[in-house]
Image (tube, rainbow, N blue to C red):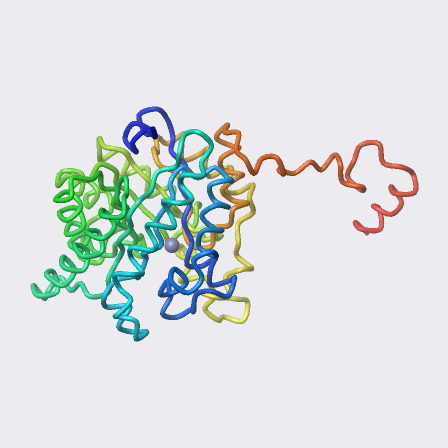
Length: 343
Ligand SMILES: [Zn+2]
């Protein structure tokens, strides 16, 4: 019997892991641009494998890959007819891998996100979003989820629709905002104020995900931690954003070209930077620490180990003392060889 998400949070920091769309795009299973998770139906084993890699690295939550698996997006790629099958299958795959956890199974999170259909000035768009979330999550509940993550929300108004739909299903809601702007949502609420409202409307976990790297997301989470009493979540992208380019969308190559979304590699964080981030987030009182677009299992394992976890993939964690050149009892011949690497 697994502990619920709120029981786990009561017991300490929960480690999450996302970034499925970016990683499966790199592996050749998702088309960059539309970023619709057709892979769920076309290559289910690829999705299961990535879930498994995150699980082995220490992730405690398997997030169903239904990001962008909603009616508007599927219409863009001509797969509207696959909507229900894609949503159901995504939960089934997450559930199957969650059960492979060692003794204490991982949790399964249903997932809804920014729809691009929401317009704060168009009341009809609210119903479109509500219907979209209700049908996606209705299927997810039937397949078996433990809670719901509503993420990458640009608008507080859209996030509140998610809170309402998730609440009507009787499930805990983790709702995170996409901090693409300096200090407030697209509909004009400061991030901390928006999170306070989300809490008041029934979200159990609030916070930020995507767009910003650890360096530019952590300062924003401090204000959120102070503003709310409920649990707080943070899931940055593993990219080196800074004051000049606070989001991954703002990062530019040396030639001035936009790096987002498929030329971000030069800005990638090392596993050590993510390990340090996980510790800083815990120190700030964040309850759910994860990672978003760009994440790899090596980041997640480093975060897990920094948080003091022993994880299955730890069997293969680095042992540089066994490297032929970096070992302490290096021979004179190899010391000369090593010297040429540094010359
Ligand atoms: Zn993301």
